[in-house]
Image (tube, rainbow, N blue to C red):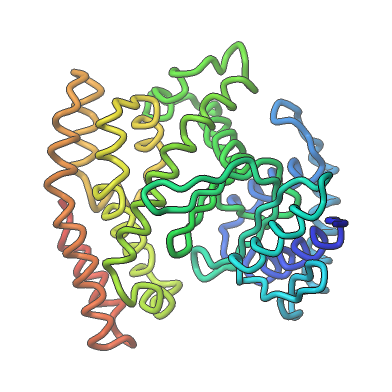
Length: 352
């Protein structure tokens, strides 16, 4: 199978999505994402300093392309004789598997098309590195990416299928560690970085950190699925409160629910100290704000190396965040048009 037309088609859908949603980012975030998108597209290593002029010219050309495609509908995916909906990942991957089995020289591919933050569509196609099933969850780990959009979330899940993107994860870690190096504050990221040899072997440290964090990402996605199975109507609520403070709060609450349900208990049980530091390094300001007791427990662990405060805080918080998520859904069911204000009030009065 000639995969180039397929890659071009997926990338076109990525361009359409970016054209419609790139304006969601603050200017500084947008420029940083575009810089790393340029690095990926031109295959520059992380250690290479990029030309500001070259990025500027490329950015202007990319924005012109976005203007041309913004109003196009998302294109169907063509695999051999099949024409498939770009959001039907299961059918597309089944067709890719069949095409791969018919060709001894074809690399196995993995595809995903779905919705992320603020209902932005995300598409990617990549080499399939591995697939396995854990406790009924199908987990696909991808390698080299052939087509992706601007934000390229490193982990996604749909129903009981989890997509983990190694290349995007490595890029995310690079961005986080590179940002830390600007001022080198003594914080959770500093502690995570010290678990690896970034000073002497940047690429090796990035690879090792990526390997470790892939496991943590699987834990979070399983937690997300388990939480979602208990929160019927969540996606509709999120769609109805898009672009409000309530949306940011709801994502934080669900993430805390998923992580107290599965992610943190497993990291603690496995004594994965590097991943625990990295977990806290990547908590959003909203998540820290509504769960201050978790940050206090983390600080205590850093001081005395006793994990019990975190373990106890997580165990106590599980029922709390499940209850808050359920109350959000109840507020949405009562009146979808005004629920965002009530959700904001609920969360503001539910910090622990």
